[in-house]
Length: 592
Image 1 (spheres, one colour):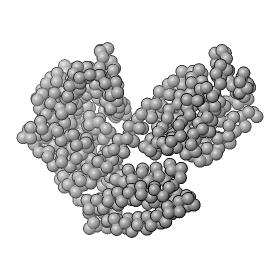
Image 2 (cartoon, one colour):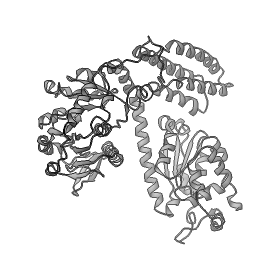
Image 3 (tube, one colour):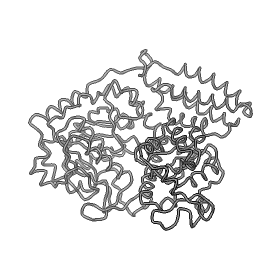
Image 4 (tube, helix red, strand yellow):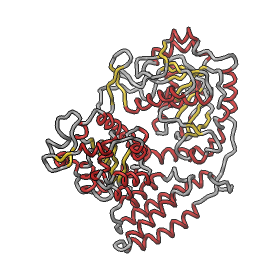
């Protein structure tokens, strides 16, 4: 065991940092003596490992420096603020190259699918200094651990560049490396998309919540709807191209069903003879107002509208019928409403949100129609939807070619595929039968495929006697006004505290050459201050991330950085004042 002397110390260091690969590897019954005996010295004088096939060793033909020369990064600020994610650590040659050639602040995450290879890597090199610094993390090769580990690199995704490295020598060992690499790459894409969306849209979402705050309580609450749909058969009407053919065939069958759809789909639904019992919007972007260019206001005036409080206030104001607010995860609701109102996870797709709402309301079963999540012709949406623009050409940067249940080629997007997967996951966990009137798009695992004739024959859209009336009565009660919570203003306290710390930082930056540690400590204290009140934290997301980037990813703190700090604090204080005005100042009630 002389060659694996660092295995136990490294595992102990990983355990102290809570790294997921430590228990994953610790639970394996490895014969370490046998592993050590497999090691060889190759023609280049390096420790090496025979291939399972018996046809040489990992680095017998080409030395490590040839493989990892391309991994070297050009020196620049983004490299220092970035990270590298490695799949396959072999004996540590690629990992050690990254640790010794990349800037000291550059983070590294390693995913190794073979426990014996991770044991060899950890046994041969002392990684404790890098682990203790938080610079190096070993990650268990499962989806949840990878997602959590990459999520911890949020600052580096935002302020730097995160590089993916699939270790070529390791891929000689087995196909699990390619599978793990695909999982890691997909997770990196999802994390990047989510963070970019938060970065761009968090101010919009929370700003909309602030704009909707007072009127939301005047309009009511979805609270009375919980479990109010017992015995009800639900019909979720999507806006896929197949709705044009299937919608008119289902419309006569839906008299005894709770029919729900998106606000954006209302014009198309009306044209097809479908009158929903309620509609919903969760889209916080300004483009949603285009629906009013097509909406028949008189027809919609009797259709209740359930809206996420993150939608543009103008949408709520312009809707002609009753509007009922729905607080959704993320933004203010996560902390502000958790003990006052129901807070639902709406996801990122309105059909997914409608399915979740019906399940929360206790519906007996749900039938889906128009849930294509793809298209094959010229249009991605049914006629009448505001996004029904013709698809003129396949764009490989945005579109994906797939096949439907009939073996026909269809086109989809990553956002549609993500929504389809979310719906499949919901169908699997919900204790509620779900049927899909299939129209040739992406299939939905777990949803029984039916046609309109089967819907009629099986009575899928027939609710129990009186059930639909009971739900409609609850929907009426949901429109009753609620007490408006108000919060003690904090802007004065924030202004005083931020002024004091700003003066201190000004003096420290004036002597930046000798006060680096003091600057870093003060920035960390300031970061804790910005994050200390959950009432304001969601709206201060960008300011928190900007300040964290300066505090944790700056190799040195130069005097010019102080200007950036002052701008961040000015934006933060302006947001606190805006929230104080919106949330009221007449009550000592404070956020939980």
